[in-house]
Image (cartoon, rainbow, N blue to C red):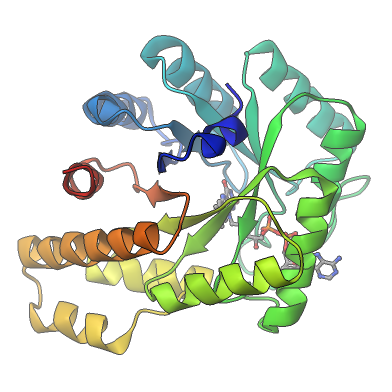
Length: 288
Ligand SMILES: Cc1cc2nc3c(=O)[nH]c(=O)nc-3n(C[C@H](O)[C@H](O)[C@H](O)COP(=O)(O)OP(=O)(O)OC[C@H]3O[C@@H](n4cnc5c(N)ncnc54)[C@H](O)[C@@H]3O)c2cc1C
């Protein structure tokens, strides 16, 4: 199924994102997590693409298994990092052979220790170029694209960043999933900017429930997301009490999701960090 077709039905599209584990034991644990979440009937599951190394192969393996063995629609992420056009072509052909119909083409981040993304030889410098390559190649994939409510780290000029998103969507993106954010005002302003420049595709908010303060501080720093001061203070106040942090995280994300859906968001993409309890609690509450 092409995920883009789900949005015209009107019901919220809920999806879960996972990353490929490094070890066999991790992979087994992930498959158990996915099995635990299956009863929540996500519209689709997406699996990230590693910065390099062995987990890259696993992205296709996992999306294929999720689709075939669990009967859940799946989307493979794919980045421009370290690939030339021939390698990208081989990956796209393999995805097609595996029956994958949905792909999230991304540029990817500069390798660790580097601040500037360098276009690989005979490769792509921006996600929009990869999107155009896929469309020009006549592949039948439904394509998603990444969007940034607070602006991408390398382009904090919000008007320029949204113009880049417009170009990416014009190249052939069917729907957008946003970077995680903790202030809904950033999402609603992003939607307004996008509509103003003529971006008409669904813009799905990406939500990462907080389960660990140190971890979320690190992730937010890496992807340039702001944790509102009031939320941060609440989390700090409970100190090292893991259960209390998780309870605040679930309560906050549930309220965030409810307000987003009421405000017109077409669904929620949950960044699960391969854990099921928080996402399961939030989604069960939203569906109540
Ligand atoms: C939903 C989601 C899923 C993700 N999944 C993964 C994953 O699986 N693996 C992974 O490694 N990373 C992933 N990322 C992170 C992503 O790779 C990084 O945020 C990366 O830095 C940008 O990727 P992009 O596809 O948004 O790039 P692009 O859309 O290419 O944008 C990158 C930067 O270039 C600027 N730009 C775009 N076009 C132009 C132009 N023509 N001229 C000048 N500047 C331009 C943009 O404003 C932006 O600052 C994900 C992010 C999101 C939001």
